[in-house]
Length: 220
Ligand code: PRP
Ligand code: URA
Image (cartoon, rainbow, N blue to C red; front, side, top):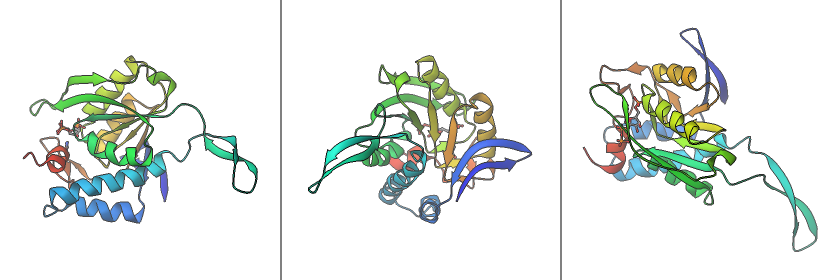
């Protein structure tokens, strides 16, 4: 079921919760502390492909004449330029890998950000995106939307760099992050597999899945 609008604390939110049973089952496996790094990584990849299916549902189609073994036909193909994924380093790369399996010709940009553990402010350390990003649908990916400081900073930076039509895809969001992101970027559609209960005092999502980067790369 696709939920276009959910009401949280009387706020209308622009968010699509992709609650397909396969995604929910895999997300539960990811949350468990006893899930290995290898399995966690495989699951991020698999969920990314399933989320990618939903996020690209409204891509415009055109037709092209092709020759089948029997006759010619006007067959549907995706219109316009290849889309661009932007991964927020480093945990975004987990989602990126799965999305690239679905759309191997997509262009890719990277925004390097880390959260200052004290202030929770996003600090940029890398930025590289295709020069024609403004002509492409841009799908920004990061598994976790907690305070949304990182997501807001990345989208700010991409808008400054010329990106126009953007979507943001995460695995897990906190209600606080959804509200902050919607307020900062109401024009950017947000997709997630789940909205959890709340943030803790250190800006971690509860119940959550822990530190996504550490769990993908085994760096704790
Ligand atoms: C994590 C996550 C997001 C950010 C979310 O990255 O991947 O980028 O935190 O938190 P926020 O919504 O409060 O900004 P982190 O800063 O831990 O860096 P990493 O990906 O390098 O582990
Ligand atoms: N970043 C993570 O990786 N996990 C959280 O719960 C919050 C921010």
